Image 1 (cartoon, rainbow, N blue to C red):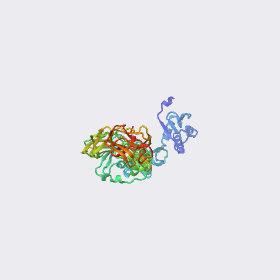
Image 2 (tube, rainbow, N blue to C red):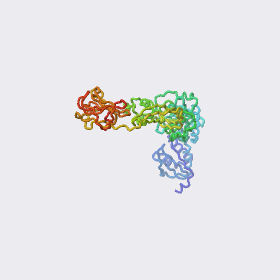
Image 3 (tube, rainbow, N blue to C red):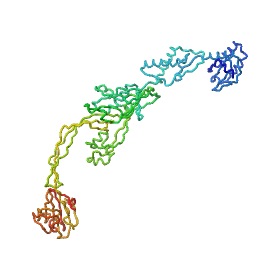
Image 4 (cartoon, rainbow, N blue to C red):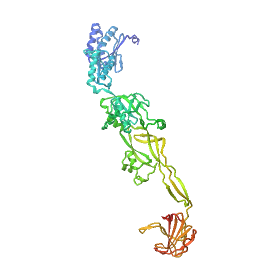
Length: 584
């Protein structure tokens, strides 16, 4: 072991396929040095039994022992050589390495003397290609550098090697990766574009889909490799012609691509919670869109891909705006009706009715706040707009009441219809993908005062009506009967039984009336009158005041009658009322 401590040097040599040349070289060295006595030992070293020719390695240790290394296994079975022979053999074997072969994707570019300069030469060549083609290129895999043992190989100087490498890469330009820009939405949607301007145009066209025609906003800045929330800047453009080209391009069928990608991240956080009062200063008089942003987190990154994986702006926009329908609950708003709701949400009326089966037959009965089901698009990239709008809205003031002491409390009459007022309202509106999701009123100005409606109401307690024939039997009700209207109720009882006053009042009629037979009419004041028909005998006279429950007639079957009964009616200002709703 002490011999190993005195090692002077170690030379590690890869065998080339030219094993024969190595053998001859070794023999020549040994002959010159008159070391024939060791020739058999060297030949044993070179035998395929001792090592795997072309795959093994020899380590020559000057002044020590020849070591055979195959596949990581060190063999020490070879006898020791003297110092002079080892030194000469080491020098001879080292000198057999001729240079380094450089390969691009298994294509031999050329051979160089110094492997350490290859990376620098590659960088210079890539720079030349970038300048010529106005691109930023990268290799799909690193150049492969192998030690060469071919003594006949020509070694290229740096300039010759650069020329050879340039031509090789130019011939295989489609194999190179090019720098591109990827837009990645947090839901996984990705599009890859050629340059930063294409990224701006694609995002601008997405936002423009949800803006009024007279409002134009443009993505003016995309800060790559910056994860701040303001990495994408969207600003208002005063001259709409600047965006005409980007927004007028038609959509085309969507395609998708993929490739080897190396990302450098730049993220945009989702829009913060909506706080209208803070987002828009209420003192700012300007109306229209105040702010445009993306609901979803968006990340813009540089990436190296194959050229055919880069998409056009049209395809990118189509992908970002692609959507699926989702069902959501919608609360009926003031002014809503089924047709408007369907149009506002991009639905057909039949589709709306299909989701809400009861809505069609009750279309005229919908109430503010009522919940219905609608569908709305859920695009891959959602856009949020914050707008300030001013609109007019009519409103009513509280009615004025006047009271009439001669009328019952059930009496009500509109004396003056009044008129609606008009308010000018300024509000901050938040929309997602064009659909309003929030509204905050920031200012109201009355431009026309309303006048109140005047309503006259009675103050008297209305009469309480009793059944005029308590012992009678209910035989026919109020409503259509036998093809005509029956304006009262029939109460059957034995002939001659008493008919009583349903409420206190003054007898207005006591006598015969066609159809009714013998009839009593009592006026109870404030528009109420009661009728008692088909009597056999009358106990009262016109002008007589009667109390509730007084006997006023006897049951009979006079006039248009089919049997002994009392036909009982209640009228209010001449309008027939259903007695069943009044008597107790």
